[in-house]
Length: 251
Length: 211
Image: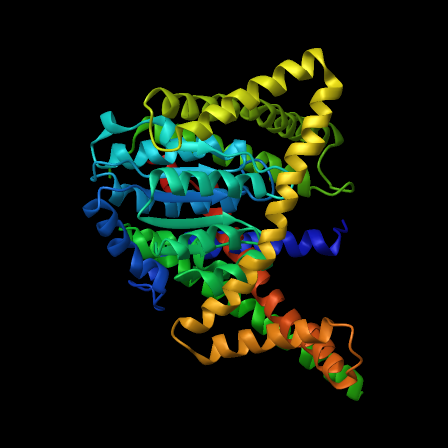
């Protein structure tokens, strides 16, 4: 039997990830070990929004279920859930926006779960989760968000998921209105814009670990440890490759 | 620990379907398993992937209904910005009617209105990015931010049509080594996090199955 190299690597990494996620809850650290400003800002942001009786805007951007971005969409929805759960006790419902129609049911369910968790299910309205079409370059989505920002004056924005450089237009609007914003993206240009223009960016894998930072279940605290373990393995593999290539050249 | 039947069923379904799709996609052609089994597995995977495509098409309809309901509700309640909602609903109606009865007018609307407005917004994007670079220095100045702005300046100035070989060499080196390495590092981090989250979803640890 001869498997192709990429398949062997894929299966090996998958097995390793399974082992890390399943085994580490027993041995993982009790607390996440690195401070992430964006997660620390969330309680204060939600508190201000509730006091001001204004909505908090949460967005998944272009992240969509059913494509290679499925996990990103699920992960972003998880972060949105934690923020929405805190915000549901206010009189004004949080607003969740998506530009991928496949994420709309996910967004609605995330909000429903948030209200269900705080036993305020009667207040849930499916219209608080909204779809703004993305158009050719996501600019129609940006225009829709800008209109919503003017009409409903959200007290804070949490923009996670997938955005390109068009994120700059949204962040320019939030900056002009002096509204605190957390932003992140899986795209490099979106990430650069989030770093430069948001109050607290979530870079790289940081947006995938909301469970560990905002959740209360002990099992999620090991997620960061599993991630660190895999990262160190990649680093060691790279270093090993470098050493082997140096030795081969020397020989 | 109390286990809810619905949650357990959802987790089992996710795990089962996920496993079937992974196996269907990862199994090589020369696997030692019987060919009939492999063919069944691949057929099931294919059907499941086709279901995703059909769901995607239906989701657009759901999205359109959502968009119309949000704007109709704003219009009837006379909430802030209801005039924009009126414009959206009228535009929607006009596009649907012209699509069926005057296709060329529909294309004209798309070419001359939507694309023009999107191009105007794309033009604004440049100013937004410049504003971003300016804003970064107005916040707390850190070494990372100074380096970020310096690199932007070098890359932008070197892209101008002036013949400054030293600057262009620095730009080429910056793009090839540190920028490339940083980008790969970030993408690797995202890939690993995606993997860990994917496994969590597959084994049903994810919260969405518990509520």
